[in-house]
Figure 1 (cartoon, rainbow, N blue to C red):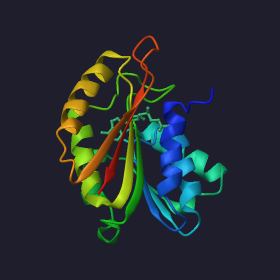
Figure 2 (cartoon, rainbow, N blue to C red):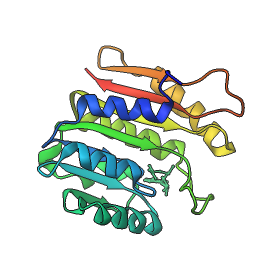
Figure 3 (tube, rainbow, N blue to C red):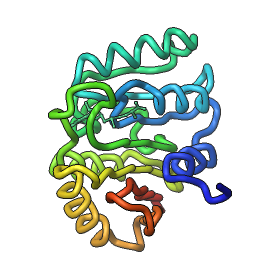
Length: 190
Ligand code: SAM
C-alpha cells in the first residue's frame, strides 16, 4: 500500500518535528513501542517523558528501553497524563517538540483500564501549553470499542472548537474500512 497507515503517519509527523537533543512526550507508554521510537529520535542528548497509570506498562516499557540501550534518556511516570504540566520539569515547558498519545487499552493487558475522555482532554489542553511553536501532538483514537467511541465523540467536539489562530488540527484515517478503524488527530501549535 502506498498510502501511509495511521500509525505510520503519526511517526512520520514525529520524524519531521522531533530533533536530536530535543524533548518529546509519550502520553500512553503501554508496551513502550512509541517511547522507544521517540527515544531514538531525540538521541543521547535528548529526553523523552512517558506516562502510564499501569505498573505493567511501566515495567514493559522499562525492559524494552533497557534492551535497546536507551533507558537513560527516558523519564517514566506511573501517573496519568492529566498530571503532565505538574510532572514535567519547568525548564521543558514551551520546549516540547513532539508528543504521541496512543489511546485505548494496553495490548495484551487489562482491557478494562482504558483512557477516558475527561483526562484525555485535560492532557491535550496541558500539552498545547507546553509544546513549542510548530510542535506537534499525534493522538490515535480507537473508536472500535464502546468507551473508545465515547472518547472519539468528546475529543472531536473539543478539538473542533479549538481556536484556529492558535492551533492547526488535522484528522487522518481510512473512511472505507469496516468496524470503526483507528484514526489520527494531529495538533500543531502555531
Ligand atoms: N503506545 C503504546 C505502545 O506502543 O505499546 C500503547 C498504548 S495503549 C493503546 C494505551 C495505554 O494508555 C495503556 O497502557 C493504559 O494503561 C494507558 N492509560 C490509560 N489511562 C491513562 C492515563 N490517564 N494516563 C496515561 N496513560 C493512561
